[in-house]
Length: 162
Picture 1 (cartoon, one colour):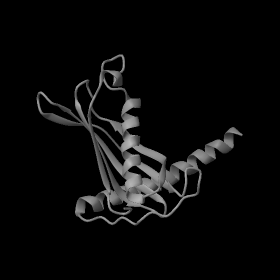
Picture 2: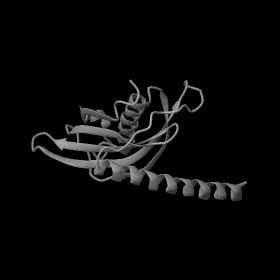
Picture 3: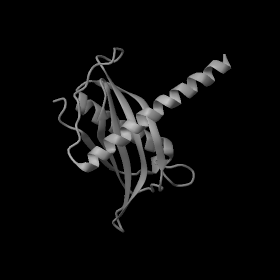
């Protein structure tokens, strides 16, 4: 039911097929996991097909190793008319030691569509329920403003290339 589930957690073990030549999970695989969890959260909230519009501030903080228990947490932090901003954290845990660490973090924006090649469709409004959620919502608003500034810079640069 749309407007009910605002958080999704994926948990799995990092596999040998996920790593790069250095023996650590490569960034492209982590980005795939982030996109999947964000998409699941966006669809769960909106009840509609969604597309990724942007990923902001992705930070690779610590490596993920083969055998680590990976948790990808996506949570809604802001809604526009048809957009949903998600905070996504990737945590890695060495099961032998029991130590969990933040591996990657970012904010994603998804847009709900009325069909796979359709137009943006409204999403239920989300309201924060505590101070932590209120701070995350404010961060999403600041990122939105920065994103608009970046768009203007890219457009200005594109004009000089043509």
